[in-house]
Every structure is written in structure tokens, then in C-alpha cells.
Amino acid sequence: MKVIGFSGYSGSGKTTLVERLIPVLKLHGQRVSVVKHAHHKFDIDHPGKDTYRHREAGAFEVVVASDKRLALIREFEQPAQLSVHDLIAELHDGVDWVLVEGFKHSDLLKIEVWRAPEAGKPARPSQYIEDAFVTAIATDAPASLPAPTSLPLFDLDDIEGIAQWLIDSASRFEYNPEHHG
Image (cartoon, one colour):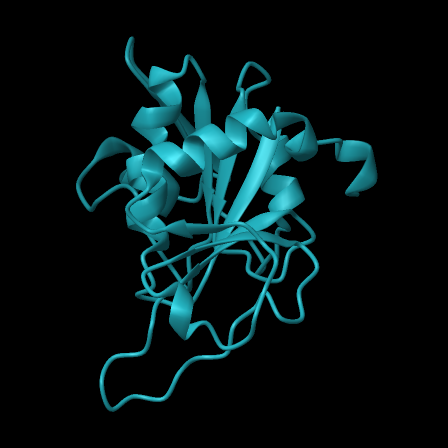
């Protein structure tokens, strides 16, 4: 499997880019999984639903499945800081690409999503200047980048170009769990 991260500040467009990239990679015959970093407490089931009731009753894990989907909900008894590599290890083996959203400081190759600052707001620092794992930049304003770069630059709307670059460079993104853990 190949793994590529997408990093950037909140509101930069990471989720939209990943969302738009998934169907394009699928059109290229690729099976895609996503690992997403969530902040704070989040929920995927809701009060009144069986899974919620089982979890609230104290189940450590609840697996729910139908003929169309499977979900695993694991409740940590103590706060746990899982690494991106722990999460990748949970994924099914038969996937071509894992798109990782968030985990900005991980040791994965990543595309930085960088937007020009809004009028009157200060520019946010860019990760590519100091992070050797940033391998390309997707931006709405290449001329406004805070420092020159020789990294590949993509327009945020060039989803086909980003997908083709990933496919053409696929061997570079091959994931080896033995190097991460």
C-alpha cells in the first residue's frame, strides 16, 4: 500500500482536497482508505442507537456490520495517543492508497495544503520550509508562498494532476510498517 499525508492549518482545504481526490483515484482503478486525525472527543454513533447503548454500558469495543459496511468503535479506558502508524495498522490489507489527513508532524511523506492569507490577516507559517517530509504543495497562490521552493506545486483545483503525480510516483509512497514502529 502507498501512504500520503495531507497537512495544513484548519480551514486550508485538506478535507475538500482529500474528498475530491478519492473518486479520481478510484477512476484510475485504485482502492483508497482514509486515516483522519480528530481533535477532542468525537462520536460516530448517537444516543438511542444500539451501538451507543452498548458502548455507554461499558463495552470496550463494539463492531457493527451489515452487508454494506463495518464499523468498529473502541472506547479507551484511559486517554491513548495513537500514532498514525497505529491507525494504518488497523486498515484492511487490500488497499492501494491510504490518504492521511492531519497528523501534521508525522514522519510520513505529505502534501502541504497552503492557502494565501485573507486580506488583513497575517500569513501562517508554512511547513515545507522546515519539514523534510513535505514532498509537494497544493496551493491557491503559488506566488504568495513564504519562501521559494523546488517542490512540485499544484493548484488546489488540479485534482487530476495531483492524482496523476501520485500514481506516477507511486513507488516513492510505498509504506513499510517495519520502518515505523
